[in-house]
Length: 121
Image (cartoon, rainbow, N blue to C red; front, side, top):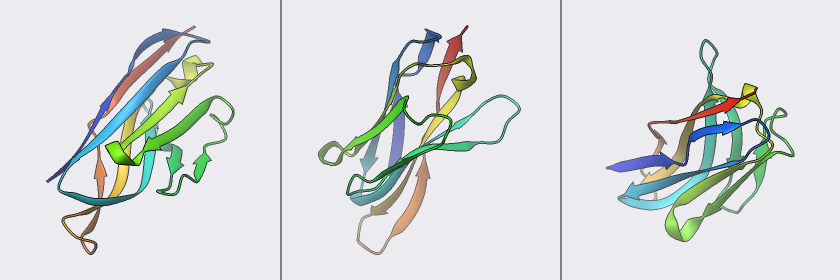
């Protein structure tokens, strides 16, 4: 079994910063792409940032220059540093990853349970 567990969400005033973490655990052979999604009330879930196993990154236009995604492969952990937060960043943030579990042939996509981020104006 593989689990993704997020942490680091909370409440912050506009202009503030938060750092999210997501740790993968279980029978992990290797991890490919790790992603952060978010879903605001009444809206569809959207991709915020992604990082490959080699460290290549991409971001949604709405967060470019403010958010930074990184990972620690030794710890099977991905981070999302969020700076200059805006009220429109308020959402539940979900970790997502493509993980080989048990062997190099058993690839599946996994989701974390989500962590709430609330930004007040």
